[in-house]
Image (cartoon, rainbow, N blue to C red; front, side, top):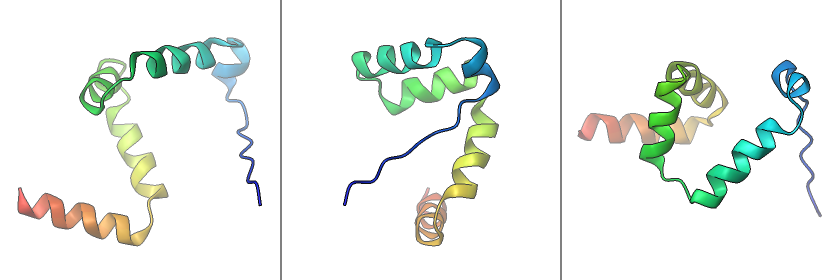
Length: 73
C-alpha cells in the first residue's frame, strides 16, 4: 500500500509560492547536517518552537529514549 502525505499550505507558503520548495531543495543539495540545521533554526528564531512541535508529535517511546539520553549527559 502506498501512503501519500498531503500537507496543507501555510499562509507563508501561499504568499511566496515555490519559495519553501526552493529552500528545501537547497538544503537537500547541501546534504545539510544536524548542527547546521540547528544553527539555521536558532538564527531564524525558531529553535524553541520547533522543539515544542517535534516533542508534541513524538511517540511515547521516543520521548522516553530522549529523556534517558539526556540524563546520561
